[in-house]
Length: 209
Image 1 (cartoon, rainbow, N blue to C red):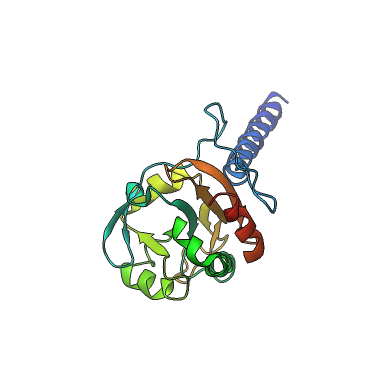
Image 2: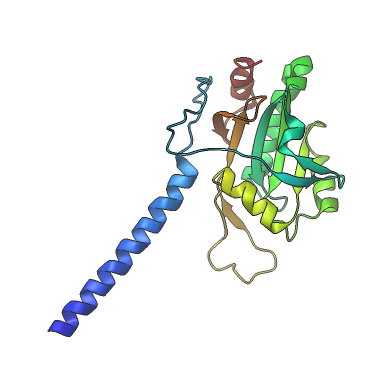
């Protein structure tokens, strides 16, 4: 009886740990202030439970080193994804492209940035070809795994291989799909997801520029 009781206690502990792990990871994806339609522009407070953003040093699609400091003076629109993404990534990038085209001259105030979560496949040449599909001001960033992981951690990005595809060559990644809006000093303002229309994005950005 005592042995069965200990086994039940151990199993209960495992389920509790698993639940805590799932909640922790969900928080990384969802605990990001977002803009429902028109942004309510609020700078991240010092006592915010989640600090979003930070410095990074990566390489753009043309092989040039790029740091977060290079984009100071413009609002950054930062999206993490991968070039083999079948749906949410191109949806988000095309919506941003349409929004920037609609902004015309005001588009120069914004810097769209695409940072890979799949450095094994997203080489510089792959990124260069992929970024040609979107607004010409887009910067596509890849780099060393440790530098990318640092950027992913700073923005609380969630990315794992889809279940059952851990050893597949043509794998799909499950990942968070958020566009982070950072101010000209690199501070987080708000965010929106890949389902946000170009029209809604324009409204959000016009509250800033």
